[in-house]
Image (cartoon, rainbow, N blue to C red):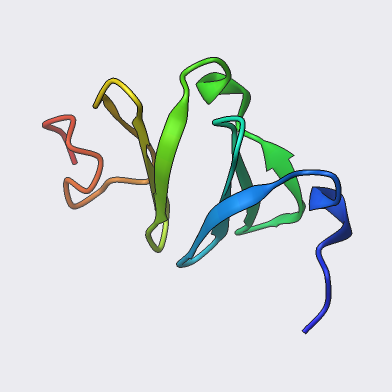
Length: 86
């Protein structure tokens, strides 16, 4: 194992891995890496949404905010995103 230096200083409370990786920090921020991205980057589209859970699929991501809203992104060719398409 090797420490992920890009997350140093963050209090990570949960992680999920699929075709990429996600981390959830104590301040409600979600971070993503893998699938072509070499270092963790904060998912800016979720900033301020108070994320409480994350899950990484093969080519898609899910996040749940404190108010119970489910957020999805990525490739959903088989309906994985829940948007009624794909």
